Image 1: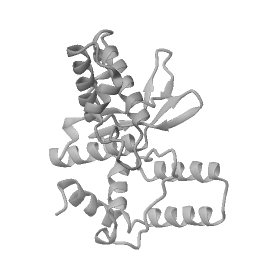
Image 2: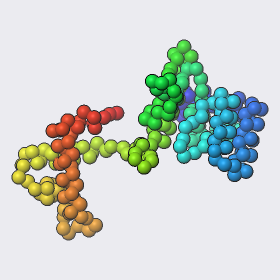
Image 3: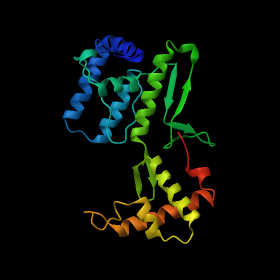
Length: 232
């Protein structure tokens, strides 16, 4: 069952795809892409077309957005194409921008998030609003890449079970300071410490246990919980 936003975007799509300007723009981009044009030219032309049609240009560092085929009805679109329409939707109600203004009044890319502004006077449906904003946040999160020394890498999601193990090792060591990391590993990683098990590495388990204890000390004694245990 489609949500409120999908129903509205579906109605909008049915009118959009019969607009002669949209049909012409779609054909223009297809022609440019089929001619194996330089990606820089294709990117610039795609962005120009989206602006001409009053659509948001969905930001994706790995893919140049293109228009959907106007010959397809809304019911024929796949889930990715429906999401695309949600991302491309532009209205006064919701302004989503991957940029921010710095102290020198210059617009620069904000790689760490989105700027979202809502105008409640323009909002028709709270359910639609939540879906549109959620879709935009999801797209940005999926394509978010953490800057590091030699470029960018995908953000790694922290697993809460890792912290459970950190607590377990830290508390075991606290209860018995004389316990070796090998002894602790036998409790925390019993399968990996079993000499009869296949494809296991006791050395690796002991090393992980040592690292978990160091992490415990960092999160407790050095106050690392303040900046490292972030949620949601």
